[in-house]
Length: 282
Image 1 (cartoon, one colour):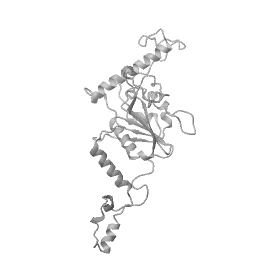
Image 2 (cartoon, helix red, strand yellow):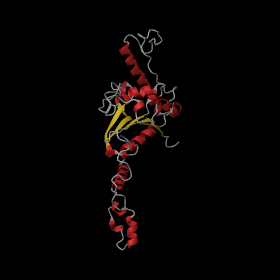
Image 3 (tube, helix red, strand yellow):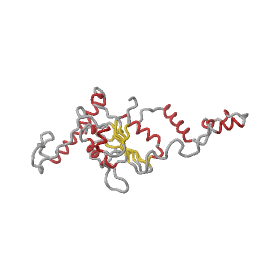
Image 4 (tube, rainbow, N blue to C red):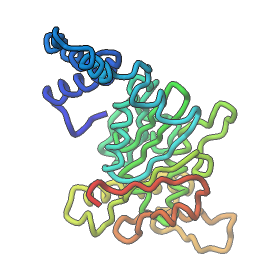
């Protein structure tokens, strides 16, 4: 997982901070590898004060063993600010991770790259490469943190169905069920902010969403051609009364005109706990 902060200085500081957190039974002088600061003439009262500075000896000082309850599946939805929170969780609990699995990204077919990280069970796998905007953190206690950010699929009136079709359907159910994951049976949802069309005007995000939107509709065209080989995606008569011959109208995605779901929209379709997370600057 790429992170915005990188380089020798950052990595050196991170290693020192990690060492500080995990060397819990040493005194502040021991952290520096230098006992010379500890006065040989310190009295009993001063020694007692120094002893009080010792860190606790509990092996999980400062954090839980795992960030999530056993077997829990947490869905994370939002923009890149929430994605960075997901990445920091992966960094903090790296020792507890068993795998990081990337989910398919919606990009145009001519930008496809072969990647072992793509989940074969997703309907997008045939031409969609993986992306750091969608990934699953799997921990040793069988808990999963499913992070889906910056996806054009939320700009639809049927965003719930699209998330289930393209992302959640690729996740196996728990050990007691062979069914795939749906929005209704995740244990909790962390909801961040979605970038709107007006906020994205003139930015790279606007261009990326336009590419993803076109890729989505191209995918639907291919589906339609397979189902109705003699019809075109744009000219099919969806209004025919003969339901036996009329194809189902594709779900529309429109970044420019359909707003993404907010907390109220999510609460209407999901009865479980929802944690709303704002952007850092808000």
